[in-house]
Amino acid sequence: MKHSIYFLLTFLILPFTAIFSQSGNTFIGAEACGMCHKTEKQGSQFSIWKNSVHSKAFETLLTDTANQIAIAKGFNEPASKTWECLKCHVTGYNLDVTMLGKKFKVEDGIQCETCHGAGSAYKEMKVMKDKKLAIEKGLVVHDKLEDFCVSCHNNESPTYTKFDVNESWDKIKHNVPKK
Image 1 (cartoon, rainbow, N blue to C red):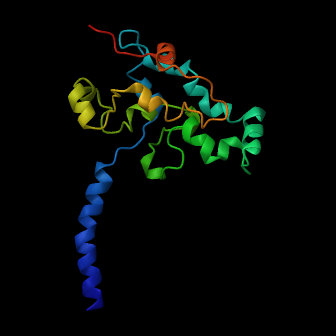
Image 2 (tube, helix red, strand yellow):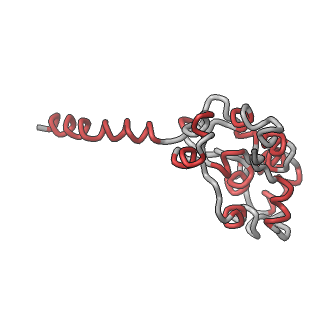
Image 3 (cartoon, one colour):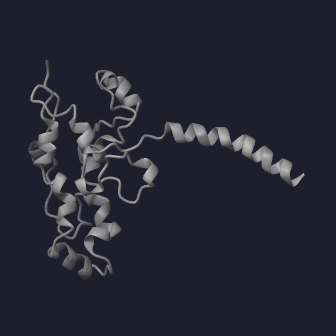
């Protein structure tokens, strides 16, 4: 009887596990996004990101200043290992390794997928050419950009300064040019 229950539970649960594991998008990393989003015709999104403070967000946690702030806040770990710092300075930290693609690097800081969602299901060109399909496959497009940005750019940050979303967006704007 005991074995029958285990068999029955396995039989009922296993298909759901397979379905859930296939439906979860994984993070592919900025370099993978940059393969298509690098040309001027496409909007040069990769170089805009690469030259932004977002791409260097993890690097800032490796500084003495960041470690002094972490100590002052009462943390025992360096800033680069403190969740309260990492949650806004990197993409994909503390996720199960199965959620991260082979080329994904946490050290790339705040990446494309921080704002646009894990890209494994919408990365293909044929999907990205159909915005509705890309969104269905997991591409995140923010209607209210400020609501998203202030999840990190807020007074919880010990280095927070006044944040104007429009002014900040002008520094990192990366729209696809109209054809």
